[in-house]
Image (cartoon, rainbow, N blue to C red):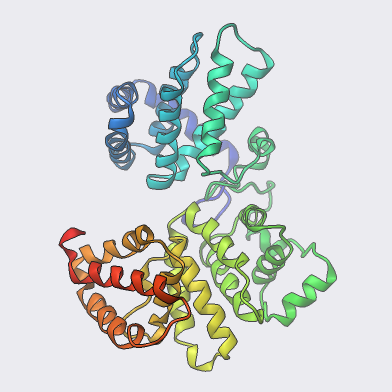
Length: 399
């Protein structure tokens, strides 16, 4: 394991001893007992009407208590509720799955990563030695519903089984490195095990460091965005090296003569994984916007399409299009490809904020001067959504 602050490899024995001490202390902890009662009450009262309240309470508990305690207790409470001899109603199992999906997207992926890891290990034990009753059926239905909510984690069953030997690469700071190799990140020491044409392409694309070459080669040799995400996560990059992933994706968009949506899909994978990538994406876009004057027209078009798609995928907020920037033409692309509900979701956040009044005023002027006066290939559908957007900006009392 690595120290999150220094990036150095931690001694395996010292880490295990520390965890044992923490677990022993946690057994008799008054705070842990209180946390258990709190989470047990949340799970026992869970239903369709209390889902959002439960989510808020778990988020608050995760913020003020030890993260390991919250993860362990939450798993124990839900798992014990599922492994019963009788068949649980589908409604109850679905509510557990919905809660976990909401926790994954709104609270922390660490909680659901821990839950899935423990759940899969327990599930495999049950498969090997099936108990009497409907326990196996309940577990299988929960697993199916978790998959149906489309918040898949990047690791495989094999990764979970071998986590003790290979490390939990899907968690930040949990990369495995053999003993004795504690000086630098593994990506700097390892060679580029890619085909020669791909390595040559990386050199021609001005990938100047070993890290950039590794990211670039991994990216362009991946089958799809999920494959790219998993392989890039296995590199276990830290700090500025990790931020290079977003910058290189944008760099690739500007290298190809026609727009390739693959890179926006890869960026979306990382932004869904952790919000720190959203901040990196925002600054990366601002850096590219400053370089617009030196870009070719086709590069501007590619960047425009990338920004529009990232906004629609919620990888970055609409506020990335600042008032002082001529790049507000992306509003046309967003409106032409979004439903009214999507437009409302995108803009109602900034309408509510008193800090964004200048941006809203600039956006209104832009709509009146640039969009409403020009003929559009998108026809009346575009203009109907344009009027809908204008009504949102004119009357913020509804949002």
